[in-house]
Image 1 (tube, rainbow, N blue to C red):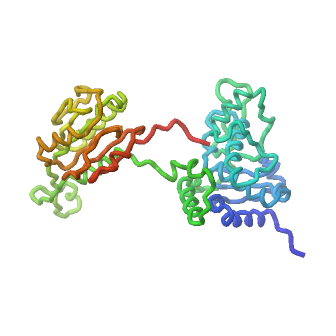
Image 2: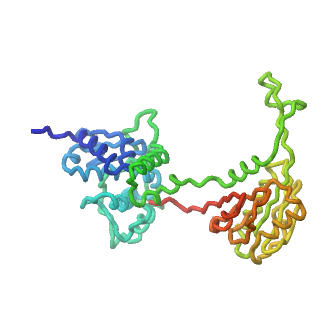
Image 3: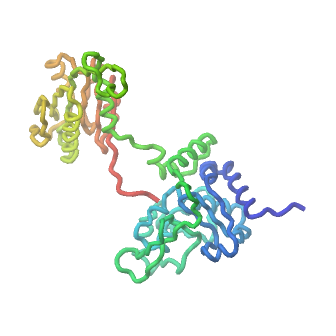
Length: 410
């Protein structure tokens, strides 16, 4: 007769099985630190099932673990890690604890139902499927009479990790004051789980196994596909085209303290052309952002000779940017059709194509030349713009501005 496994052994087995059956969740689950509670601790901390904090500590009631099936145990472990990955323990703000706990549990269970059978006693709100915890919370508040949160709801315990217990009023001067629990399981020097790192590692591991959970790449899009700072890309690109040399005539000031005679970097002047799409499809705020960034470029690089061209379907204004550049004084907003061909023709006629770089701000709905130019074109496309046309152009690089975000999901 085989020996019955202890709760600690069952949790270890569940995490190992997750690595095989659900590698994404299993990889993250290996960062958890299971902590078995004594009956006195269960009563002291009020943890009837399981709990989790931002540091990955997962205290559990061994009696609860004994009662649930292996499948339910794997579900519960995944439920706990999702609280960490979705940063529910950080996003509570001034919300009421019991309603926030209910909303976050509903959001997680809606995700996990694609990979697991959700236990009967777990909250699911079909009307709010695919919604964020914040959206579910607001819906619960508005529909409190028809869809009330059970009194004293605590399917699992969320430990918010604040340094001191703070009175939680849920906003305003509510009489029902609550306390946000701090983590008594945090050990000195213990760091919070590095969510971006563990999610990326888990995604790579699951991809190697060919088993990525449905919807995970959408939920963690910001982590798995981070948007690079387009302004930093633009700056590095411009630096790369500015030629430079070294001279010992004027030593580098940075070498004085080293005791060595180091050469000074001498950067030559370089001509670039910056074109701005002023057609009717460009919103005023986008147009203003273009000009503001051009002003920043003129301030950052002393050795740029910059020509600014305002163009819709024809050139409206040409400005040689020298010294102080005032973006608000730029005239020539055309609001007409869109074509970049006049800009390329102007460069050919007036610069003999002798420029290092053309930076073109546009929404992408634009006519372009299909022949390869002797200089590089850097297309900066608006967040809502279309990059398909400009990506077809030879000797060109395309940057798309990031879309503005107004909150977290789930």
